[in-house]
Each structure stands twice: as C-alpha cells, then as structure tokens.
Length: 78
Image (cartoon, rainbow, N blue to C red; front, side):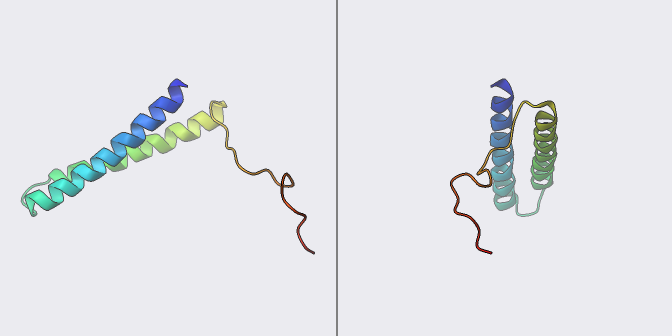
C-alpha cells in the first residue's frame, strides 16, 4: 500500500510541476529560466516514476490487471 501511495504522490508532483511550468511560461514572458527548471523537474520525476513502476513490477509489488483472454468474451470469428 505504501508503494502505491508513493506512486500517486509522484504523479501529483508531476502534474503540479507541469502547471508550475505553465504558470512561469505565462508570467515570465521569456525573462527567466524558471519554466525550463520546472519542466526539467517534471521530466526527472517522470523518469523516477517509470523506474519505480518497473521496479515494483519486477519485485512483484504491483501486478498488471486487465481483461484476460477467453474470460467473458465471445469466441473470435475465424
């Protein structure tokens, strides 16, 4: 459960830095590097999130779920 909370927190931080970058883009009008810094943080956090998801899958902490083939589906034609 803690792992999933970390994932959600990282996702919220990614969205927050995205909006922060938008805010700086609109407010600064090209006068500073705050937009680039905010978007660089977003890229770094996204990379960390991706690596954590891969690690969680590899260690068995999270499992993909979805529709399993053959359950609840009609047979394919052909």
